[in-house]
Each structure stands twice: as C-alpha cells, then as structure tokens.
Image (cartoon, rainbow, N blue to C red; front, side, top):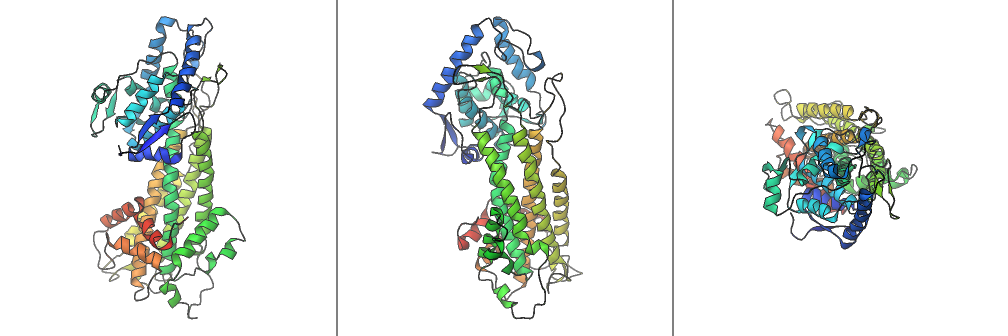
Length: 515
C-alpha cells in the first residue's frame, strides 16, 4: 500500500483514477460517514422484511430458479453461506491481482450507496481486506456476465467469510482465515440478503474496462509516436496532418491524433533534407497518410467506452435493491450488456491500430518501399537478417488481435434452469480485451524499435527533437544498428518502455503534454 494515498468511498460515483490507484498502486480506501449512514438506513429496512411474513426475494427466498421457495428464519444464515460457497465455482488460472482489487473496490462502492442493504460492518471487512493487501484467488472461468460476475465475486465473498485461498500482502498463497487473522479482520457471518449483495454485480467486467481505458489512452498516444517515427524515417510527409485538412472531417479523435503528429514531427531534419524537389512521390501509402484517421477513430471509440464506464461507476448494481423511499424491488440492472458491448467494441480498434502499425513496420524492411534503407534494416543483408523476424512476431500478434476482435457479447448460453435465459458474456469480453491490450503494446513496441533503427540509419540527417528524444530514451536500453544479435530481449525492453510510459514521457519532454 502506498503511503498517504487514500481513496474515499462514499455513496456517490468513483472516479476512474481512483480505481487505477487502488487496483494498481495499492492505495488505501476509507468509507465515509455518509456511506456508513446510508448502509445503516438501508439495513434497517432489510431487517424489517426479514422479520415479516411476506416472502422477499433474496431476503427470505431462494435464488434464481429457486426464488419461489420461502426460507424459514432459522435457515436464512445458512442460505447466505450456501449461496456464496456454491457460487464460488470458478475454474482455470487465477486472474491478475489488479483485476481482483478493482472488482473488490467496485463492489465496495456499490455497497456504500446504501442500496444493497448490507450491514456497515460487512462493507468494512471488504475495505479492510483491500487495505491489508489480501487478494482472494479468482479464476479465469465462471462468469457469464449475468447476474453480473457471480462466480468471481463469490470467491471474494468466500474469502470475507474466512474460507478459500487468498494472496497476502507478501505475495504468498495462504488460507483466507489465516490472512484475516494476521490482519486483525473478523470474518463475515453473512446475514439476510448479504450473500446476494456481495456477489450480484458487474464489478469484474467494469474493473477490467476501467483498467483498459487507462492503458489504451496511453497506447493511442504511443501509436501516434510510433506513426510519427515511421513517417519520418520512411521519408513521408507531414503536410497531410495540417490542421485545416483535418478540419474538413471534424472528428475530435482525428484532430487530436493529427495534432500529436504535427508536434512530434516539428523541426525534423530528416524531412527537411528530402524536401529538395527530388522526391517524386505524389502521396504516401495509407498506413502513413491515414494514421490520424485510424488512430482518431480509435480515440473516439475510447471516449464512448469511457462514457459508458462513467455511468456504470455511478450505478448501484444489485438485485433486489433498497430504494430511497424504503421499497425493496427486484430489477435487471445486473445484466452486463452495456459494459460487454463496449469491451467488445474496443477490441476492434485495438486490432486495427495494431494492423496499421504492422504495415508501417513491413515497409521499412522492403527495399522497394523503404526509400534507400538496407534490406530488413540489416547491417549486412544476406549475412544478417535485421528485423525480418521481428515483423513476423508483430504479424503473429496482429493475427491474434483480429481473432480477439470477434465479439463475446453476441453469444448467450441459458443458465439457472432457463431463469437466466439471456446472459451478457461481459467477463469474457473483458478477458479478451486484456489480452488485446497486451498485444497492441507489443505491436507498437516492434514498430518503435524498427522505426528508431530507420531514423538512426538516416544519419547524418537529424530527427525531430521529439522523435529524437524517444530514440535517445530507447537507446538507454537497446543498442542502435549493427550486426544481428539476440533480438527478443530488445523487444521485451521496448515493450516495458512502452508500458511504463517512458517513451511517451520522452516525447512529452519536448512537445509538452500530448493528446
């Protein structure tokens, strides 16, 4: 946990930056007094229903297809425990710690709205686990995205009860009971409705959406940097990125991308050196000339997805819910379709931006198209292969990204004896988007690695100050042109420099903040 970084959890919406802070940086959480009061008020209404003679779904009945069974008062605690144990039925590899922490935070945020009817002490247990760095083990498979992410959230709720395995703050896999005891946290004994309230939400898929939005915002800026380096090293023109040309098609993402390209290419000695009238090309290939149109459309898709995420972050997802007037009503807000659609939607521009990046890389390697650079950017073509196989790796990833762009949300497998006869598959959409984001990172890294070599090979012509700063940052980790050497570590180093924002920071040290 980072010192002094605390995210306040109240009845209102979380900021996406708060999700990233808790999920990735281990920020602490604190339930506000307003949240505690809202939960206490809603809890009193749930307890009234629990004591009443009229069956109330999730309070005194079974769940899903078993909702018609009235549960006797003496069995209701068992009902809640049984729900959590039976629903903690995931399988496969454990998902990433940051995903689980995001999911825990988002469930805590919904509890804090006061619309779920849980006791404040139950929410405080979940907050305590986040602050103690206790991460329940959640598995890859199990969620259909309706009713929400039942199985993943059930593994979290199981750990709150002191059951199942967790990863502690030291990174060890230990029994939940042991981790809770070491942290001084009392396990939860779920009371009426609490089992359902802990597992009935879209928090897993939403958490992955918020993390993907943060990653893609950075990667689309990186895509502009990669494109600028390629345009420059391939002796392209930046005239097509002029503001007045972009204004003829006023998409905001396109304008932002083109502005980045202009800033990144300003003052390029390489471009100035080939503008002497000897260049006979009428116009550049699409992968160079249309970079802002493609990356810009991706930005606009990202903006739409961020709008959906902001609405979801302001939502209280549970069934039934406690309304402000005291009514407890069933609803369908747990269905993951709104989140699932944008998770699938984002995978499309991820694949396309990567595809365009690969096409630019390929142009560097072909003497018929690279305008005077050696074949495959090799030191001694024939003896050396240069970046030939780096492009193969890039192409293999792009091919995988195209498969990952096939939507998950168009599928639906009925469950719960046909009570849940249409599901969102939002968790699956989120899982494949995470793989796609990783793939885009790798594709852009290969382009930057290749374009940097191309820029170096244009010496003594000098690059733009911004692209030159990126090359200089890369050269702190990866050597410049020369005879063939073990290439995989250089690719991985570049991947890391992309992912940790080092290369964006290098460019922005010259340009100022990029879009």
